[in-house]
Image (tube, rainbow, N blue to C red):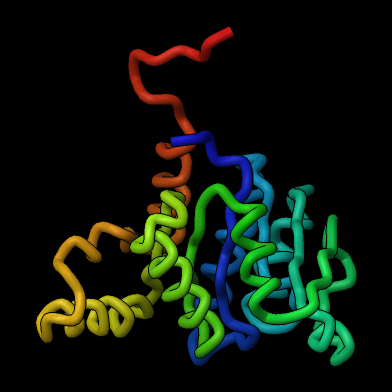
Length: 193
């Protein structure tokens, strides 16, 4: 598995009902920046997206926003990111985020977050990539998605192996620790010159 240099995060364009969601987004943004990983996200200034990007930028981190042109025209774009990539469509936005990421984290969010998370898991199932996918469980936020996967398995629409396509971690500290472990070279290995 390659080192982690860039982490893509899917999260809400709203703040959600609990202050814990905002706290998690801030902590993840700070943690990614402190680890010197590049944050790649949907480019918005609203909700958890903006909170996370602001936290990473405040720590001196590199933040890449990938946003479709129609959302940029609606003035929801974050104007302070290190790099802004404007795409022609939502699909090309997803591809742009994918191409720039070594790993994926899903924070709480709405339909867009669920869509992005399911699609990246599906791409892994189809063997289009083998990048790690981590669900950050904040106040049970990952439960409904995991339950949907379990229901698909129980009803015979998915094989039990789909459970291995993603990991669920309790809170931001656990997610950051897992990313750090994925980034570190395996014991006993050395880089070739």
